[in-house]
Image 1 (cartoon, helix red, strand yellow):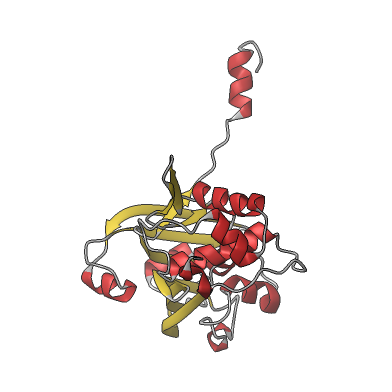
Image 2 (cartoon, helix red, strand yellow):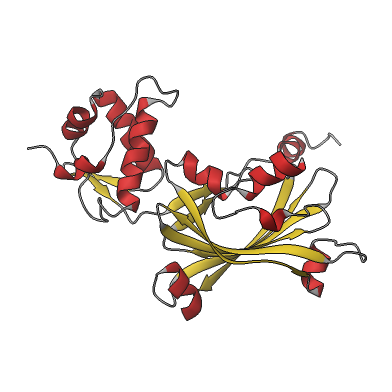
Length: 266
């Protein structure tokens, strides 16, 4: 009998530009986030997946390999493949957008607006955003960011008003801030500096994120800059540690290695 948990999934399209294994990967991820596949459960068999989605075993294995590499499932020799304690991986090699990242992982992003105001910046915010003395107003949003309707982080963002007048009129519960900056204001975030600090979630934060007080998390401050060096965004986030992890790819310093191998060179 086929695994009944697979009844939730849609079908795969060979006409899509997205590879079949990546479509299947997205379906399984959505099943994990929706709680259809629970931590500790065995993943449906390769045979069931092949029959349900009309794909080859190699396609199924490619999707499972990707799930293993992301830490969403794990293999037990002679036993099968099991659902892990799922965490969303966010890669820090590039200037990421929450919305784009979620779509890339096959998840559906959404936001709940807690606050949207134009206000005078505090001294710290004004300093971080290098606001001119003549205009210290910012557009401030506080949002709960969600994937498949599960809250992952509380995000408070301040954007200089003088760079983006009228931003308050945009609906950031449905649109990406970076998309609006690019398409409506012609502003392209170029680089960002982030500071990550381990924390325990306070009761008020845990209530908004629907988890237990004291759950481990991250406090993240991010300042994004335009290519001109002007700050365009200051965001402070409280992120669930039980649902998110961050991946940083590190490269060797080639210049330093060359000096060690050839100590006579400058």
